[in-house]
Image (cartoon, rainbow, N blue to C red):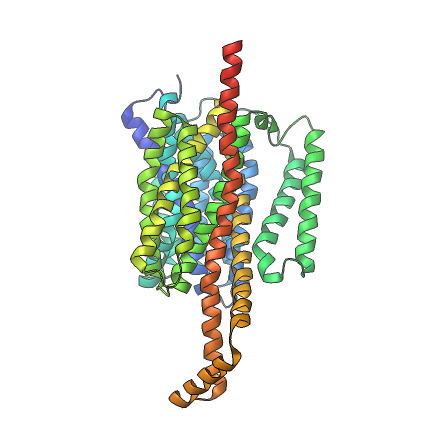
Length: 510
């Protein structure tokens, strides 16, 4: 009996249980991003300290992904999924009870590992519950968690923080986790076959060191200075050396940690690269930049900024199942191509229009096509990758997808941070160069006489105004730079169709 040979009611129950867990786990990622700046006082630390609340989670989740395939084969999907939910819930409780930085960072490490277990197992399980003709719909439903939840995070985080407490962001996971555990234990089917597989610990060690070094370097590079920090240099070379040692061990080992033979299949290879560049390097930049735009440029309170972001998040939710249905009807490649080109149009021609002078309603409308494109993107690229990998290698396919998401997203966030600071400084310098200093001096003196305040104070106010406007104009350049990375991903979208033509040619002559 195949996993999808179940009744419609069973499929609905299984999918709901698994989806709620995935939604809870990935929602927590962006919900916590909202509250981190507010934790300096409660945890008696500074911004450099609280940044580790995010970094520790990200690093541990990336490492957790690398061991998921082994755990799933050894203990089964249901056991690992419920273990992940239990660990995530307990860690959430520990985060909410924490009153200092060290305990919350330790709890976030556990949360990150648990999220990796939840995301990989839920992805594989949902894909297995649907027959081959409805795999697109399955991934469209799953996309509600992967795409809709992160966009919804700022709204939920802003609401809970403003009306309750930052601790509620963590406490809310506990009752949800308990419900999932009870329902999952009662209803989710058990795995029928388990395997006693060996684990390549040495490969895991080297790739983990490389991943940790890379992600910490990306998260701290802007703060420490990319080219002026000894720590960043050490992290960079540690990452490179560790990845090379991993490859050396992997090549000479009979037990592989990652099955790289999957990359011989062009659909799989192109799908991963599309996922890496379009989602990670490009889309994640907008996920990072849009909340900053609404809060720091439009000067909206956290809750109102979250509400503005919810506008495009809603369209992600609406179009995710639509993308799944389209993938089943017209094919994953055509759906993915349409989503990518819609995203390119949005990234190049709509989002760069966002600035201080853009009316809020217009700003929200300009982000709606971004939500539509994101909703249409995830399901077809996942179907493409999963079908190419085959059912027997679905676990490692999901691991590689999520690893690409973490690493690509980390690169994207680092690029957005670096570009925003660079273009802010560049625009400030240009504004100063273009000024008529005599005119500005006379203007500032007239303001001094009008308001009756010291000239130094007037100059400082004017300087801050210039900084704000350079920050405002810097978003235009940063938005455009994020779009350029999607162009690289588009090359691999085109290659999908080139391969199809070649295959048709071979089959017609054969």
